[in-house]
Length: 119
Image (cartoon, rainbow, N blue to C red; front, side, top):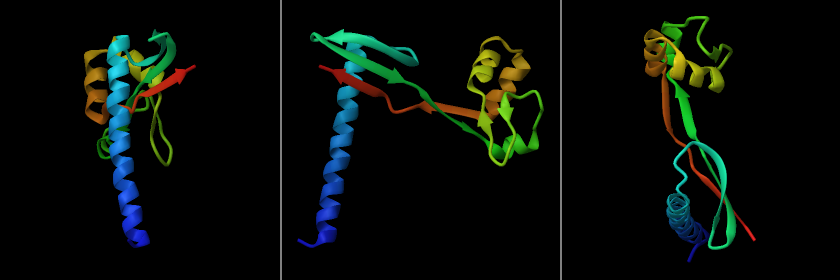
């Protein structure tokens, strides 16, 4: 077996292990009843586990460039970054127009969870 074939074989095995790890982490998240975004510590089977979940956030730069408003919770520079706390506050308590405008340019998706097992 050539080195390239070995590398491909290892990558296939790693992909399968990563998928299995994600499934097991999701089982622990479900068992702990962790349903919110953020970090919390639980005890399962006498072991302490820390679960951290989040969201990946992406800005639509084409729309943002066309509709830029200084009051947006976004720092303007060579690249855009979302001010997470301001974004969350506006999405919770802002006007319908503000929420609609942000919903058009911000896309969220679940981030990869983290599960740390102690002991």
